[in-house]
Image (cartoon, rainbow, N blue to C red; front, side, top):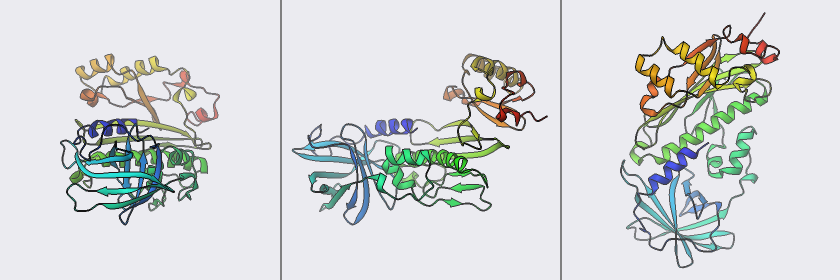
Length: 358
């Protein structure tokens, strides 16, 4: 889910000052990928080491990643830390020099020009042994297994807003809807959607220049709302706009359809088996004619072939997802009334029956 952010981080890191901490390319033979937790000076930190890929760490009091490039100096592992002071290249901000030690890694960290180095002590982290601060869910379990650093940041008490119809994740500020009285499975699915966005938001903010990291207008902004809620189905629309320091801001829309009992995602074609890609485009183009100009209509005819869908009281809502960024303004949402789609529907499904009451 985070590939686009991690790829961007690597590209941005390529501009850091080369070999600023000394040493040579490559890593010591003893260096292995892993997650560690300990102290830098007196401050608690957590570090994810990938000698042949992306390494990163964060101060637990701040919770934004700092990016590291692995090198070697003799048998020592050198990790070059870099940050963005502005929207230009990354600059060297610190040097780790680490060696294996009983119980983990031991060494120093030194800022450029600093008179002395700070002691670093790190022990392997087994995230599976950490207590859960959130309700257990598939996404939380996957995060604990696959991205322990993100798990450390997000595995804490979240804030239920008045009325219990939304929850805010405190570090990223990401807010996501909830349904009072919902099944445990549905609540888990909604938590997992929010986990994904919160992790992406923190990664996005970490790549911004330091002066912009606390600017609410920068970074990753999510607007999510329930568009349909009935006895068996819950649907939402998610709109994200983000700027993580790249060439330009961007945005996207995603529709979500969930089974209220199981919490599982419901593919649109489960509800409407005959509403395949070709028919979606035909019906979309018919409906969008009155909403866009001739130039956009031509673009949509030639480019818009993939859609995200969500449900509302009025029908199935389709939004193009494959338009080039430069013409993203043409991605209007079109509502296909349920009456129009009756022939496409699986009318024997208990889920569909909630859309076609007698």
